[in-house]
Each structure stands twice: as C-alpha cells, then as structure tokens.
Image 1: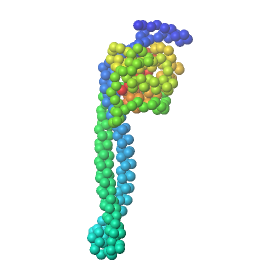
Image 2 (image 1 turned 180 degrees about the vertical axis):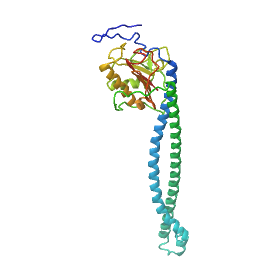
Image 3 (image 1 turned 135 degrees about the vertical axis):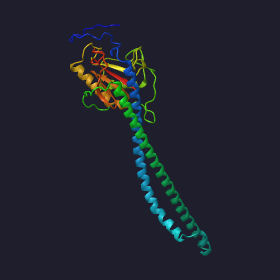
Image 4 (image 1 turned 45 degrees about the vertical axis):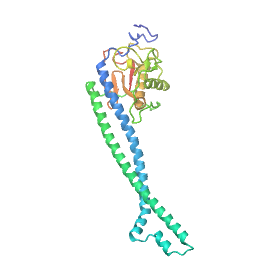
Amino acid sequence: MSMLLVLLGTGATAGADPTDPDGPGNQSLRAKLDAAARAYNDAKGRLDASHARQGELQQKIETTGQRLTQLDAEVGPIAAAAYRGSRLRVSTVLLGGASGTMLHDAATVSYLAERDDREIRALVAARKDYTDQKTALDNEVKLQEQQLAEMEKRTQDAQRALGNPGAGAGVGGAQRASAAPAPRNADGSWPAESCSVKDPTTSGCLTPRTLHALQEARAAGFTHYTACFRSGGGGEHPKGRACDFSANATTFVNARAAGADKTYGDQLAAWFIANSDRLGVLYVIWYKQIWFPGLGWRAYTSGDGTPAGDHYNHVHLSVH
C-alpha cells in the first residue's frame, strides 16, 4: 500500500512502497551474487578453521619434537648397551648371584628391563605421533590451497555478475568487530537454516542467523527503522535472509540520505563489514555501492535510478 508522508522539518516524502525499499531490482543478479557469496563464505570459513587447526598442529609437532629429542637421548644408551652385549640378563644374575641377594638382583634387572622397554615404546609412539601430525599438517595445507582457489573463483563469479564495475569508496571509517559470532559447522562453514523464527520488524519470518545479525546491530546502537521479511519477488527477503535498514530513524524516505542520516548509513554499512565473518554477511548495498567479500566496495550499477532502487535511503544486508 502506498504511503505519502511528509516528515516535519525535512519536506521529504516517504517511499512510495515502504514494504519494498529495494525497488524492482535485478533478481538474476541477486541470485548470482547469493550463490557466489555463499560459496565464498563457506570456503573462507573452512580456510579459517584450517588455519586454526594448523596452528594447533604446529604446536603439537613442536612439543612432540622436543619429546623425541628427550627420548632419543634416553633410549640411545640402552640401544648402545644392547649392541655391545653389556646389558645384564636375568639368567646371568640368577646363575652367578649369591643366594642372599638373588631375589634383589632379579627384581633390579626386571625393573631395569621394564623401564627400558617403556622408554623404547614411548619413543616408537612419539615417532608415530610426529609422523601423523606432519601428515595432518600437510593435509591442512592442501585444504587451504583448495579453499583459496574456491574463494578466487567465487570472487571472479561475483565480479562478472556485477559487470566488472569500478572500485567503490569505503565508508564509515574503521569499525570494531563487536558482534557475537553466529554458530558455524565444525569445518567452519555455515549451517543451512530455514525461515523459522519470528521477524520482529514484520509479520513474517527470518532465519536464526538473520535475526542474530539484526539483534547484534540493535545492540551496537543501530536502531533506526528496519524491515526484513517480505513475501514475493526474488532475492533473500522472502527467504528471511535479508533486512533493509533505513537511514532515517522512522521510515524509508524517498530521497537520498544526507547529514546525520548519511553518517548513520555509512557507519552501519561499515559495522556490518567489520563483523561480516561473525554474522555470515553475503553482501551489503548502500549509496549505489555494493560490498562483496573478497571484492570490497564496488559501484552498484543495477539500480533503477530511484533513491530506493539505488539504495541511497537504506542499507541492504543479505545474510548467508
């Protein structure tokens, strides 16, 4: 339903359809960006998880290597003695020992033999651990190479989908990553989610991860008018995976954001980017620019010439 409001003190009219601030848009573009960004984010998540495992493995390898050095020093004399034939044998002690010391000598030799065997077994186990850890580390490096190649491919896919636009300009300055991380799979990828939780901004639904992003933005102080779910059309909104954050505090204004509203939009867009890894951000559109992971800001050439369609009046967030 259309809505024509005059904001006191501004003289600007509200958007013709506040339930669809993105304008007609380009659904084919959105679908391509969605596929590219989802694959990129999963690859990056697996890469980050692999780097963490690599760090743990390197620490284990260092610790195991130190243990190997220690055990080599302990087992070396045992091996040398065995080679020279100078290790005492229980039979020798029993045959040559006096009756009063026989049991004591036998127990001593048995203890030494057990100790030697224990140290040799520990050395063998440590060498196996070291080899296994090195193999695991090599596998992590191969996995990282695969994920980097996947990220590069998906970045190129997004670049082509956008029509190879020129680089954009960063906005909002350096924002701090302050959002609580959303849950990931064990391998670092994002779990699949459905539109299963109530959208507090509409009568629709959101994925848990999108609701989390909305709540974290609110907690960070970004409380201007927001609309997330809407039925019909393409893109992520009908799937509960997108929100439109108005630059204006109370509605979508049918004009380019300026002054404090522009500053708000700049800071919000920059905050989403700073927290993209924690929130599972697919892309951000603001002020005729689009931010894509791996690409950074690019000119947004798929708008319709209106403040809404070119995203001059709101920040669009799509979530994995």
